[in-house]
Image 1 (cartoon, rainbow, N blue to C red):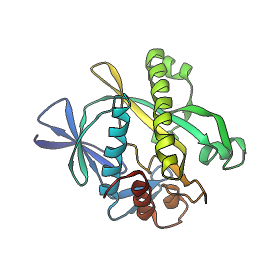
Image 2: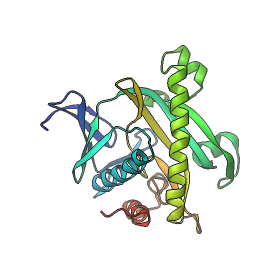
Image 3: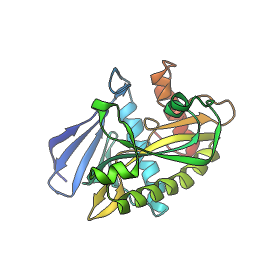
Image 4: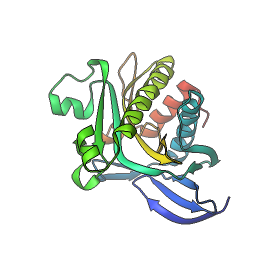
Length: 236
C-alpha cells in the first residue's frame, strides 16, 4: 500500500490517503492537547503507545461483532483503516460520575451511575463540542434516527465488552467517547479508543490512569497509559 498526501491533521493524529481510495493511513503523533487545544505538549512514546493500544482494543471489539474501521498495524505509530464518511456526533457513555457531568450537575465525583448514562455531543471545537440530542441531530442532518439508534446500541455493546476487560485488570472504565462513520452505508466505529478518549481509574485506589493526568498536571501520563495496557495484556 502506497502512502500519499496528508488528508487531515488533528490534535494528535494525522490521516493520509493511499493508492486505495477505500483505505487510509492513520498516524498517531506524540502530540497531546486538552481544553480544546489550549494546553499542548509533546510526550515521548505517546504515538506508539496509543497506536498499539487502539489496535488491541479495536481487535477485541471486532471479535465481539462490532464493526470498526481498523484493519492492521503498519508500524509503531501507524495503522491502516477504512475510509469512513464520518458523522459529526460523539457518543459518550458514563459508568461513574466524573468530568463534565460533575461540573454540569454538581453530583459527587466517583458516584456509580446505574444504569450508565448516554450523551451526544456535536464535534465542533470552535463551540466547545456542545451537548445535543437526537432531535437536533436529525433536524440539522448530522445523523438519521436509524443511524443514531445504531450508534447508541453499538456504544452500549462496547461498554459491555470493555467494562469487563478493564475490570479484569483491576480498573474502572469511568466514561468514554466514540465516533462513528459510514462504510458502504454501514455505521462503523471510527477514530480511536485509547486513554486519550476515556477515563480509567484503578479499581482499588481510584488513581487516575488516563488523559486527566495531563489535564490536571499529575505527571506520569505515558507511564500510566503503559500500565493500563500491561494490565489488559498489551505488549509495547
